Length: 131
Image 1 (tube, rainbow, N blue to C red):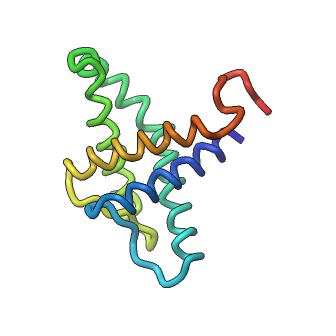
Image 2: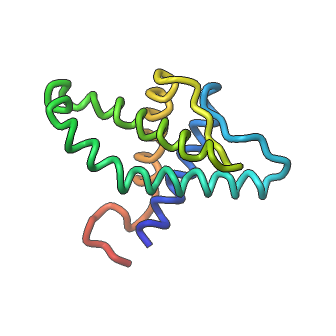
């Protein structure tokens, strides 16, 4: 259940980043259903990248987190977004990220949107809540 909630939150956050930023875009589709499917695929890849790759990168870059007082978080978010774009470029459902600074801004937008959505979702405030 928690994975599904994270998937939906990431899909909404990626949609917000696509809507706000010109440098981040999904591949053009012909219908709303195709767009939702594309958004689901990209969100699934982004969620898996954040679950598998992000902890390793965060552990290896721990000195940079400490040195920058946590601002290196933006660079790691950008790298995860760029990795998602690279992985999805091999499919018909692609996420296009124009460059590093666009990825940094997109990572910030996705982090803020995810944070707001997690505040709104009931029952997601405590780690022990398994309903």
